[in-house]
Image (cartoon, rainbow, N blue to C red; front, side, top):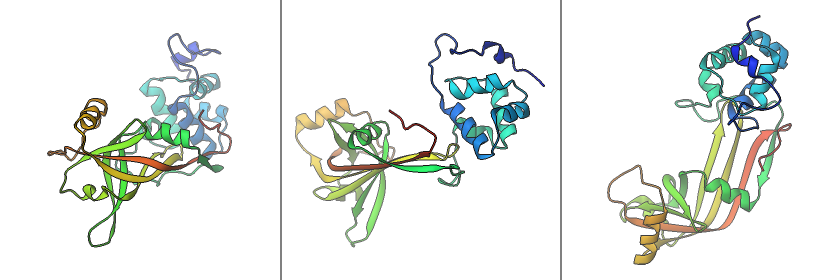
Length: 238
């Protein structure tokens, strides 16, 4: 059995300067082997490393060498990108499900926190012909309000003076986990010079669509709901 050089550093504490607690890569490794019904010992043997080092990778926020990640991916029968969390070009939701998934409702405070971590969301609206539409926008959260820039003649400008829904989500294909947050509220155009100036200074989002999108739309949620899918044996964040 080969022993990876990093195994010499295995202990009860991470190396100096490295934060304690499982990192995403370690969680993905653990989730993948559990889906296969493999123990740490079996997985370590397949990857040519000592079980203690595998335990360290799963339980601490580690940054193993690319060679180590490659060996683990081979041992688990998945791609390296999956362990790193990459899923570009893969249809969302096509990954593995958890062996024992659970669906949790999210409280308003956690929904607000999750909203503030992302920069792209989807706003719903009705087009002039009465058809529903869902449009992705670059957004920010300022003083509790969801704000985004658009052009007066764009389809997203139709949200002004309307009750709208705004959704943001995150999916980890490798872990089979994810969450979604839905905000509902009245959308308004921001017209006051001081208010617009404040948004320009405080909001750090730039529309990927480009062009002159100087019209600010603000929506203060009157309702915030969310859901999270995780494993039964995984402790919820917070």
